[in-house]
Image (cartoon, rainbow, N blue to C red; front, side, top):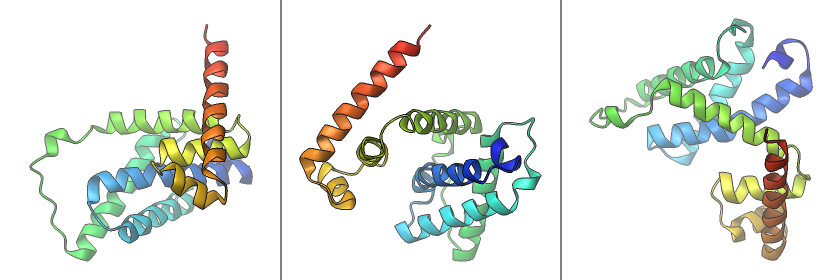
Length: 168
């Protein structure tokens, strides 16, 4: 976010791309809506992050700002659709701090995946993060299933080696 605010179009673009999977998961867990509704919410939130980026306070955690926007977009969606959401399980909802921790972890994962060749990173993202089956990932990438399996295996092996090497 800071790089984007300082004028780096590449940083800003990378931020917006990395937010989509994080927001999809956030909305899936909370809305119990259709995939179309979830995708609409993700896009609305990304647009809001882009258009309101000037309101971000660099002294505060980015994730708190992001999830505040996401919450408002979700409430607006519920109002538009006149949908009521039961609060029986409110105690089970994670706190904002855990949202922030999850978002920070997501950003760390994205940084690590950025160290891998594109094919390996895409295979890991699809199968391990987004939850696609090997067959779905292969079809989406236009590759064979064995190619996806090998890419995931090699990518994870490289990441483990990198993390172990960087440990103090």
